[in-house]
Amino acid sequence: MPARRPERLRPARGRARAALLFAALACAGACSVLLEGGAEQCAADADCARFPGSVCDVAQATCVRPGPGATSSGGGSAPSCEAAEKPVAELSGEVTKDFTLTCNRHYLLKGTVLVTPGATLTIEKGTTLLGDSDPLSPGILAIQPGAKLVAVGTPEEPIVFTSALPEGLRERGDWGGVILLGRAPANLRDAEGAPTRGRIEGLDRGGEYGGDDVDDSSGILKYVRIEYSGFAIAPNNEVNGLTFGGVGKGTIVDHVQVRHTADDCFEFFGGTVDAKYLACQHAGDDGFDWDNGFRGRLQFLVLQQEPSLADEMNGFEGDNDALGTTNSPVSEPTIYNATLCGKNREVDLEQYGILLRRGTRARIFNTVVTGFESGLDVRDAAGEIEIESSVFFGNLVHNLAYPEPAGSVQDDDEGFDEAAFLLDPARGNREVDPRIPDCFNAEGPELGPSSPLTEGAATPPDDGFFDATATYVGAFRDADDRWATTGAWAVWSRK
Image (cartoon, rainbow, N blue to C red; front, side, top):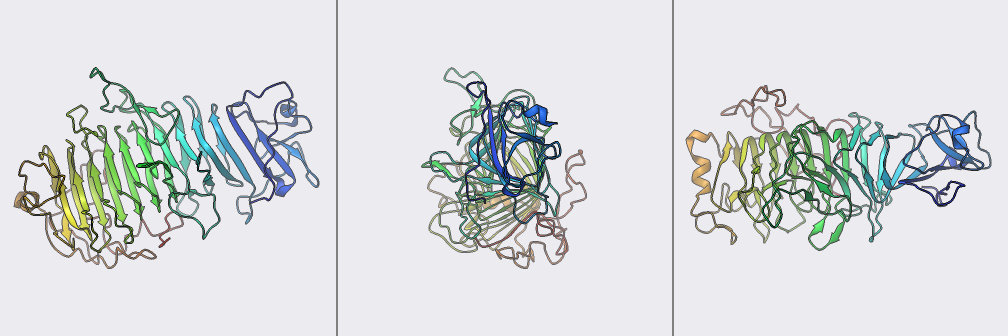
């Protein structure tokens, strides 16, 4: 990172009306980059007239002020995406117009960066964003309802959100995280019982979400990695790695890894968003969490828990809402093909592969649950729950569930017997070795079974989203199915 601070240039005419402050050291240290005024961009030097002494970097469509050794042919020079050292651009405030982040710079998220309704933030493949660790205002990227994030990487050129600290010093909780907010339904109510919008945890402004558009789109995330996130705003108020609030099924989420976050990897507050190929490694809390009426579809999920943490953390954790009401829409995700690998050691607190409580419904199929304290806990009346065609193996205290009535101290399931429920022959669940070579290896996990777990597997719906050919249990067909460990998009490490 350059030694001197980026220079922010302000318009000559009075106070800046900037919604986005964007500053960087560019042109191999020879230029200072600026952008103020709602993500205005330039096409020629004349567009930068309001910044005295500046020219247009045509490649970046941004105004720069040349320093010693800089050149401009209608604009300043720009580094390549392959450069070993890249300038760092600083982002803060609000993005109010369409804007593109390019891969020949890194971008430092200073405080909460809000993309506001009507604006689209596009991130080129191979781009890295750095989350600032300011304890008073950690870096967060939040997409408001009506705005979009288009972040489309590739297996070898992913888009990476990481800590601004140097490699080797990065830890979970260094910065905030990524938050997508939309206009799809959630089940929030005001004091009078009337439907109301939600407010996402972790944001001090601009965090409202929810509406009535099930098809709402918040953009596209493909081949994205988010790491070292989860900054604690206050006790028990951390930002998740990737948070969805009222996000609709017009949003595309495909191949996203969250790793070494201090809170949940993925949390869904209401909404109808669908997602495929999600990987979670070493979260400080749950792998996949849902609340407030989430009704999306999920397929191909993998979790590897952090064995050194003793906190209660679960593979799946679902609620209808925090109070356990029957508010509609009732949470009811549909999940096929998941591999959930716990800590593979006993801890003092109970932890579960699947924890369902507070009135949630769930439809879970073709899932492997291994290495937890126990497989399943339902903490209130069972309601409409389907868990079928799944394998429970190697859960250390009680493979399926704590025996009744010796379940969780928070258990109030009116005598519901989870083990008997899972072993009902009609549900097709089994207690057999899934033959996964090493799903607990942090550095190089072997996540696929030695041979396909096809016996008793369910056929996913052929509905345009689910892969109906995935007629096997778990997130991987066999040992050669390496979607989570092939390419640069997903990284597996102990720290």
